[in-house]
Image 1 (cartoon, rainbow, N blue to C red):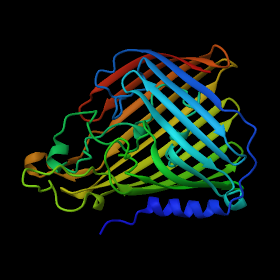
Image 2 (cartoon, rainbow, N blue to C red):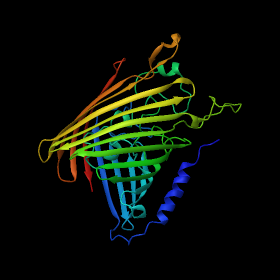
Image 3 (cartoon, one colour):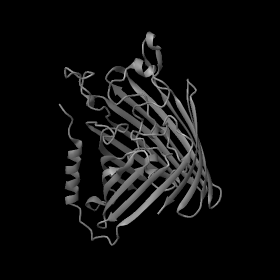
Image 4 (cartoon, rainbow, N blue to C red):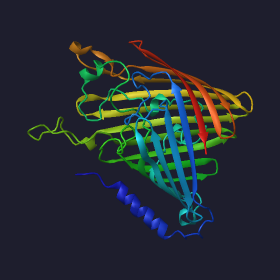
Length: 386
């Protein structure tokens, strides 16, 4: 029996709510077009350590975002984003509608379409100019593990795989937004967001042909001025439909929707004077057809920014990811982590040439645990909004 089509159900619920929502007068705001251009000069990323499924990489020479936003009424807005990267070409990265005050209730709003993930905090921060004071991304949000989304990974194959980066799925994936149906709002110091989306956090349906729905949620609170905390959770299938052999048999028993990714995360934001501190802790567990144990991964980072003067700042991020141990059998290394631990430190100096133009000098160092593999990356980025 297939799962209930939650996406269709949520569309019907949203339609019923909208039927009770008075349509406000047309907002007197013209179509607003803006953009962000990032030009990078960097040392080679030899193993494409920062690349995502489509090859797009924050260190690529040219990255361009174009935004077109329009409030069609006083409560309904349309937001779109086109993205260009020298590796992945041009694509529609975001296209969603925002509906505020559903049924006249200020704390009940909706966002429908290709939109940023609701979990954690980095995905939303990375959408806006200067929200990421560095060039690179945290490991949890793009780093590809050795776990395959095909369902054919074995314990022996994972333990015996080569060092980073892997060819498989990441813990989270922010390089292409997914279709989602989201309800969000605020109650005083509290905020919430709940959503349904095809695929999973590590394998969104836009990057892989994944059946099924993921439920995700984030709840947050602003406990003190400048101090914001959040907790996130999600669960959903991540495997692509299996490739059948010549006899029409799948490579593993069961339905790919029976194997899910579970996620839990914490995020923190602290802003005080010239200081800005962001931190996240993310954990995930994947069920796999050919391995009895769940495959677990945990990642955490702390990011600090300090404004030296009106035009200057310094920033740094310390980041790590670790993997659970599995039993691959005596002939295949016995009990060992299913992937190599990885650590990253990144530091940058930023100088604002004008309100719209920012220059960053960035150094990123990534190492893996047991093998000691290391990559250093130097970059100079010119980022401009228009």
